Amino acid sequence: DTLDPTSLRTPIVAVLGHVDHGKTSLLDKIRGSAVIEGEAGAITQHIGATAVPLDIISSIAGDLVDPEDFDLPGLLFIDTPGHHSFTTLRSRGGALADIAILVVDVNDGFQPQTLEALDILKRSQTPFIVAANKIDTVPGWDPNEDTPINATYDDQTDRVSSRLDESLYEIIGNLSDEGFSADLYWRVQNFQRNVGVVPVSAMTGEGVPDLLAVMMGLSQRYMKEEMEIDVAGPGVGTVLEVKEEKGFGTTIDTVLYDGTIRADDTLVVGGMNDPIVTEVRALLQPRPLAEIRTESRFEKVDEVGAAAGIKVAAPELADAMAGAPVRVVRDRDLEAVITEVRAEL
Ligand code: GTP
Ligand code: MG
Image 1: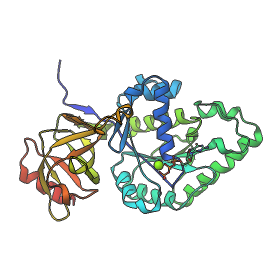
Image 2 (image 1 turned 60 degrees about the horizontal axis):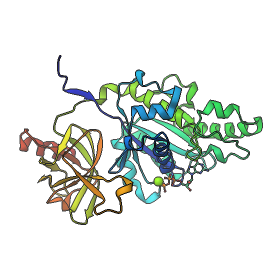
Image 3 (image 1 turned 90 degrees about the vertical axis):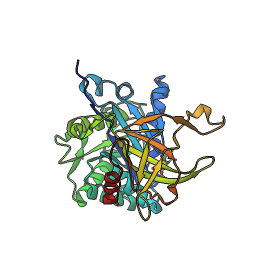
Image 4 (image 1 turned 90 degrees about the horizontal axis):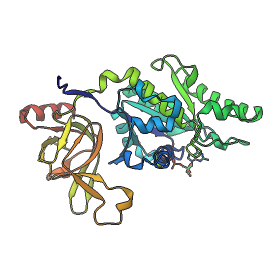
């Protein structure tokens, strides 16, 4: 019985798109479906992220996701704001992500932050799919809650389905104008070469099974090797945000993409001038919603493993920078870790 120290981590999925196109609603829908399946506890809310394990994905996606076909543990979604002033948060999310969902409102089509998000994905060479959202708002739409797209599409009148087709082909045309060859996802053979468009409604859940199935399939097929990590190794991550937190001082909201962070680790964090060397004071995760009224909003944990979102409280973080690297020292040479962090700044 050999102990394999490497293991497959959860792919990090950034959700990008123009303001109000439905990014947060889509994640709420996925969380809500899990609650209905009676498995709310299985979805964990991380700092800045939502982890959805494979068995939940499979219960939402039904026949479209057979857990036997996958060995990746699930998906970790990072929501990003669509408002034009949040460019840096979008770039950070996009750069961190292994894979992305670009959300486009079918009625509103391409908008400035849709194009901006596309640029970010292009620059970071992040594979992505397009969620053509709000299909339920097509005039005359007859909703079929939580069904795969083909089932509900076949149930629409010709007039309604051709209205949807028009909007979808406009999105495909816009993608082509930006240099991406795209098609409806069921026609795409090679997701590395072509962008798949998935019609969805975050409101009714139509197409959400398809969206999850495509994301799982894409990750399994093209990302698997990149997901192999040393699970017990020293953690590596990126600072999403630097925040003051009552009772904890300055904290860094971090997305961990390799190894682990422990409550007694020494960290090197990218700073305004120089790398910061500091000791973890507390690792904080959000408490489940039900407990939000009681005392603290956070719960202290002893250890987290990639991929995860975690708030780190530590001294000396005042000069920490959003977007900067975070590295755990543990049994490594401190100077070597400092050099690595400096090289990434
Ligand atoms: P920002 O975070 O501000 O960029 O917006 P967002 O992309 O997260 O959009 P959000 O999920 O907050 O949704 C914006 C509005 O659109 C809300 O009023 C939602 O209820 C509505 N909405 C989102 N998805 C759908 C959908 O599929 N159908 C309908 N009818 N409304 C939707
Ligand atoms: Mg939002």
